[in-house]
Length: 264
Image (tube, rainbow, N blue to C red):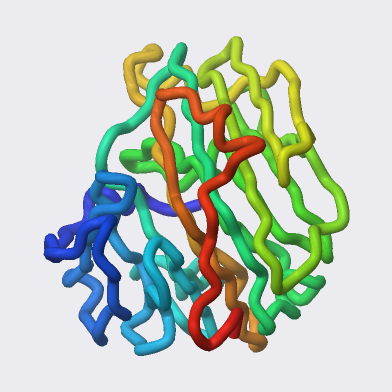
């Protein structure tokens, strides 16, 4: 979808996972704030506004996008907008199993998720691009009132839907755990609120890059969306990822505190 944002300059902030983050102040594109989340570095890709990103309570992150909220210089040309936390730590390779776990709450501004926008990523495993602008190798979307999980690889020109169902209730916490064996002989499994929703063999990633030598994925969370008129808000919480198994979070997710002002 775009160039690898990990090549962009980031400015290291002093926040840590156990410390409340604050909304990023208005900044130029080159002045990316960076945070430690799950003890790993993440960069914020968002428009320089006061509302784009905030941390209303520990380990809970609020993302908001409005018309023309370009968080990367290519967004305007591509007709997209974003507010995302992007991992700039480890990249994951063919043969490795990447686990990600998080909780999410759909906010009151959700009409783009209901059908007003053609793309609505809330979590993705981005490809490790150099000169390409390619689709993520795994993505979670809120499209036309549905929750979708899709994968993409060198095995197909298009993403493949692995799960699609009416999205769970807005304004309340939902928990998602995903496990993906990367590569041509891949596999994906996912659990929503403790129930298994995906368990299938699936090639994951552009495994032909550099004769199979290039890493395939790194995670990011927030909103990456078509640049429509209506705003959108989502909360993500307790972002966790890596190659260590996270199956314990399927039925015992980390509690999510409600922000003082509620899910607004």
